[in-house]
Length: 270
Image (cartoon, rainbow, N blue to C red; front, top):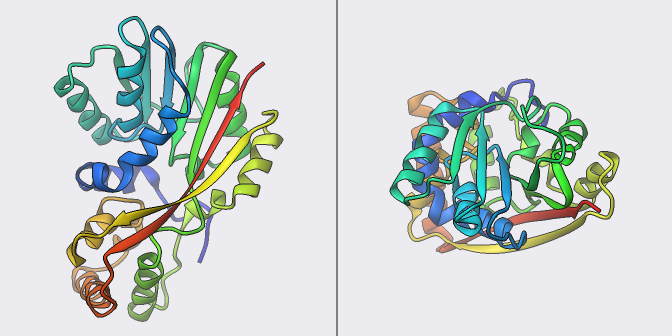
């Protein structure tokens, strides 16, 4: 198992998974975006930057809270994700949010130009995590807040481990790239923030129960999250066997819910 980005292409993964990710969003990911934005206590008129915005769950929630005079910028590397985010903004009648393709490490914004900068479930893709955090902190105005949300140690427990075991049984030769493990430990995340020159970060780790309405719902998670990158390494027949093994495990163990660990980190600039 490897946790660097040598064989993990986030743009390819999330462009491929964009529509599945969006379909799974409200059931499985929406709460991460909601909790991140609620911690910010945004005010009307605030300017917000959401980096690695995906199909826009955090950016859209922020846009609702900063209306009528506030603005939100969403940035993502996947144009497919941005297309979906723009559609959601249009459907929600939000004209104070803009979605732009860009890289988290080359953001074209002035120093201290945002009241809040957020990144929900994206930091672990950074080539240089401390360097990326330093760049994000530079964009926060005095009195503003940086909010970083990452996955915790329990990742769709217990099914992610069941999935990995089934993949290994089929493909023992496969090296598994799991980048989100780089930031799953709360103490490690706190140290990264401090190393980036961000003083007094508050890091809270939470375990969230998530309903699993039926065995098929698990494969929607596989197809609509970063797990898809592992599934993409399998041919169709192998993928089908892994899916059947996973769904049978759910039936045999009468599993009706999962546990997802999430780390919420915030820091306010003096």
